[in-house]
Length: 390
Image 1 (cartoon, rainbow, N blue to C red):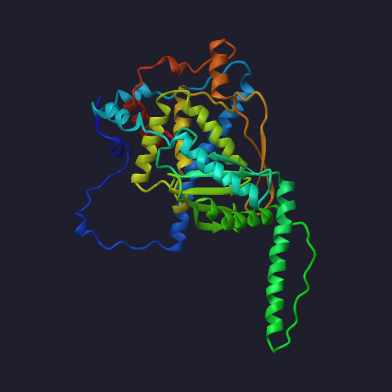
Image 2: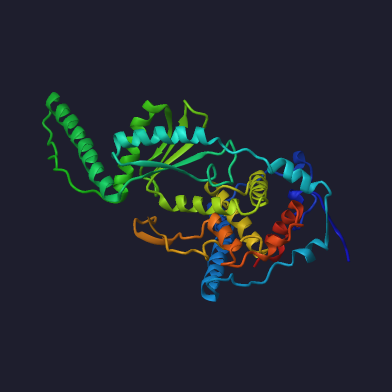
């Protein structure tokens, strides 16, 4: 049987490579048309959508197949794949050395930044506002240099109540400015009548809250880099001038990512190989410039989901969503402002390990195979998604 020699991650993808001339002799690059960019974006996003769909289908098979036991699904033939390849002898050691002990952002730094944002939100948005960190900084798959995402959680009715008066106050201020300019001008021009306070939509309330935070947060040690109150998901990007975090993104009532953070945090704690494998794959994707939703590529979150899905197919990780003991419905507004319901329930890692130990559920059979090295998993990931995945 022919043996394929594989060195490092960037050489693991099975692609039809051709010899490229030196950079200086390459022809000038043609800029793609708008139609081509749109087509490439749809193609790049199709893989992540397909993986998520497969995950949902797998979870439905879990729920319909059994309750106390895990459903049995065919495990990927990784041993067979490894027999066809010869991996670099230092690949595992190098991967573990580079990504096995990557430090995360200190909890004290995160808590300090979140506390100042919460204090500002309670002052200028609503007294009951609370701030919660989410994303890669706290889900177990981040680094010390990762950006911090912060959710401002406020009851929808309370948010609309306070922001409706803020919105009216802003309109009243514009009315007074217009009235003063009209009185100072020799020309008589009609002044629109100021309407009394009225209710505003949830999206308008979030936009008003972002504007309020942009005005108040500089007093708490932040510099406003970008404010997007009218975006699909109103967002505020900050630079922390007092703390150690470079970039901080603040959103209002963006609850679904908070649930995803809890889920990924559980997955990252189930096996020591999960986090370094995710960090390596994301670093490779960023180096190849195929990571970043804002550029039409798969997001960092999508690459993380792909790694978890691959490890599930090796029976190294369970489906914690399928083992959920209770429903956790989450309602989010879509692009057009309509409410959509999501099921975000899952079995926490601590409960899963406890129930496996007590024999209440069957653990992953792949967990008994601790001989799989980082090199084996790296090769298996690229082999699966480049040649086997359909």
